[in-house]
Length: 136
Image 1 (cartoon, one colour):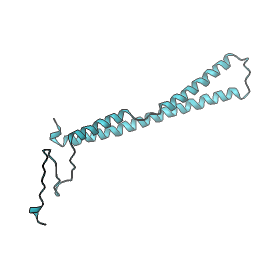
Image 2: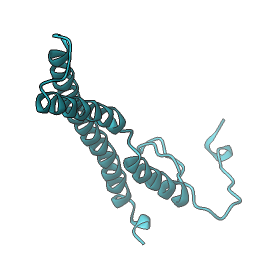
Image 3: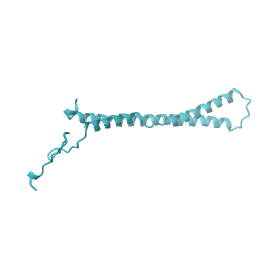
């Protein structure tokens, strides 16, 4: 096949980039599709799954056991088995410690996901800067 028969006919009025073998390869993406991807990235950034239900539940258990301990110490005549007070203390310490750990993990995950999405948006903006027709 010779070079004369290798022509491309394009009927639509949209410009399209056809890669030349000597240049780097590119894919044609419409402006609307590109903007839609950027908006979805921003939307995903706001909808990162959180662990707030888990640590809220654990903080609630800790508060409940703390208030139970306060009422036990306020009324010393309360008949409670010997293992009752240490159990409340153990529940309080464990649930408070677990809740604090979940808050820490939640903040780490949130920071990591947001930085990944920010990196993607930054990368998209740097790609936009290489094309002057993107600058409107």
